[in-house]
Amino acid sequence: MHNLLYAQGGGMTAVINASAAGVIEAATASGRFDAVLAARRGIVGLLAESLVDCAGIDLTRLAATPGGVFGSCRFSLPPEAAQPALYDRLFDVLAAHQIGAFLYNGGNGSLEVTAQLSQAARRRGYPLVCVGVPKTIDNDIEGSDCCPGYGSAAKYLATSMMESGCDLAAMASHTTGRVFVMEVMGRNVGWLAAATALAAREADDVPHIVLVPEAPVDEGTLLARADAVISRLGYCAITVAEGIRHVDGSLVRASTKDPMGHIRLGGAGQVVAEWVGESLGCHHHYASPDYLQRAAHHWVSATDHAQALAVGRAAVAFALNGQDGVVAAIRRLRNDPYTWDIVAVDAAAVANLERRLPHEFLAADGLGISTAGRDYIAPLIVGELPIMTAGGLPVHYRLDRATLPRRLPLYRGWAEERINARGD
Image (cartoon, rainbow, N blue to C red; front, side, top):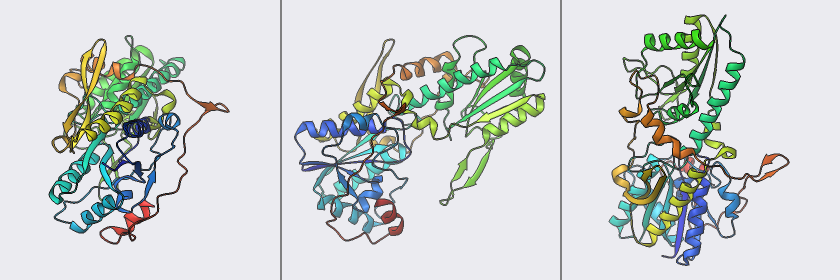
């Protein structure tokens, strides 16, 4: 199969580099590839012919580093019929570097790229096996029981809410009352917000309210619950997913638009905190973990880390077996004890779909998470890993190696400025 090419796409997680380590380790150990390469900045790096050789990378340190050491991008491939020259360039680069297997590590959009390349290779008669390596903290990939990256983000957020609860309890005041709102990522799905419900081990533990996009916010019900909690405890903690909506379907808060015209979310937590605080006449505070929730490798879930490694290794095995156009998906076998394996799922069938919280995972009043939802999430955060440190801080791996010499001219074509700038 000559060479294998790995790339990272979309937003980062605390364990995406563990999947990279799994790919490199398994591909090298197989002895079936002349070289294992990686594209800098995902599919953009492939177009720009910005590739690195993965030989000699310290896989232990790589697997213990958050972010994506090879660089990522958010770049959707157009249909081949619309931009045939762009696909010509992709396959020129693949051929120039004798790539026989392409493994793309990403979320829904990246899985669509995996399917697109697979289908284009078949049409062209090019011998390429494409396999998707799933990751996303949003946990919204269809066909996989969970997604590498989610368990660690869930563990971090549940811990953050639990620790905030200790602070709130220490400063509780029945005289003025106190509201704290934590806004987490979640444009259309509430998996991350739901994870904070694990912090509540006993009655009256935080969070007292969890708001998710799957359950529209009824302001009257929310205010009544917050008032009751503050009256009883002197404080109330609320988790808010950034994409929560009013009962009429409108976003609680939509900020600006990006250059592509997509709505940027952010600020729903502030809206809820100010509204509840002002309505009830109490102190209010809000916070957003933002990038912290997807980069906290110091508190990574050992289960999540193991699954990230496993999908990388399985993706190589699928490629070696000639299983083209598939995703290395996680399958839950049992809940107690939690057991799982990896299966091949058709990439085209699940690409760009969003798996939402099932109705049975939501509390009846829409202000929390059910026992079934907690039972689903709980195994995914289990276990801790030792952390390599120096001077009291974690040690992270930095990729410091030159890209391979170009074998083709600099890319000239559709979106060339964006591709060349991000690919080098």
